[in-house]
Image (cartoon, rainbow, N blue to C red; front, side, top):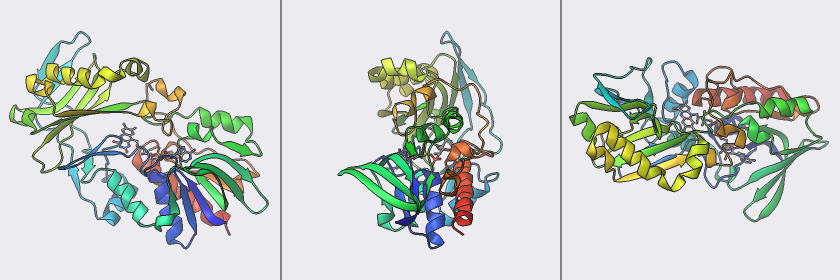
Length: 357
Ligand SMILES: Cc1cc2nc3c(=O)[nH]c(=O)nc-3n(C[C@H](O)[C@H](O)[C@H](O)COP(=O)(O)OP(=O)(O)OC[C@H]3O[C@@H](n4cnc5c(N)ncnc54)[C@H](O)[C@@H]3O)c2cc1C
């Protein structure tokens, strides 16, 4: 019987677990994937780590992210935007513009990638506190707390805790069976919340040097044709190799049918946008989040036309004493973003401290 079970070892769950553990709680983090980080995922080369999930932070306006970076002793660098910008219309007509759209405040990236933040939170927990490959399937209320059933690598496992926090996108919470059952209104509220970027996919193209900078280009582009819709320079600070990263314009439904071709189509599009050298990347890595069952549901495959208005979701009695939500999708400020993930962890930590008194 532990004090708190946290479901999900994304940034939100790890931050919450670390906060509770550093205040003396016996915490267990159950994570479905074999790795921690959730949507934070890196591709490593000899030069360093590239982000295949979240990459940008804005510490000048995100106090929790700023604090976490400071506490972890991580270094940030500015997203490279200097130089010409490329625009491709629906018909594939390519135009070069003298500059792109400056971001204000500038987007910053982390040396070591966003996974370095996840690793720093995890380092603040005892090793045995995180159980990867444990998919939570059922949560039952008992007289003294909660009973959590997870599918582990060696079979089903039943774990007991005084309280449980669910640090996952609300639509994934709907896959867990609750006893007693949650009221239909709570299920409806949870299933209506889209996972932020859950239906998105990123492509990373690696080159031996960022040659576009020598050509006066920023590596930035917008395309109305696809497969990529928005492209940025993803090169690492101070590294000799270069990288471009793009978000797919093509929705999940279109990507699914052409999965095997995507890397080749991306290389061809980059060649059309930036010139022949761009069409010959050393490697292309496609990370399709819509295909990840521990990030996206079928409903997330439909592209969003705007940023959802994320809000806390209240749990009814008798659950409210024993269970709370965390995760980026319940934060009213910076909801969906990394800062929101940390804000939700903070709120869940506040709930846990009050509830146990
Ligand atoms: C392509 C992409 C780009 C993005 N770009 C940015 C950006 O530049 N800046 C930014 O601030 N944000 C960005 N985001 C959003 C950012 O990734 C999220 O805000 C953040 O990672 C959410 O963290 P979380 O801990 O709330 O959720 P997650 O990271 O989704 O963590 C949830 C965890 O729960 C686990 N889980 C799910 N179901 C179960 C279960 N039943 N049992 C046990 N474990 C389970 C999952 O495996 C996962 O590890 C981006 C997201 C994507 C996909």
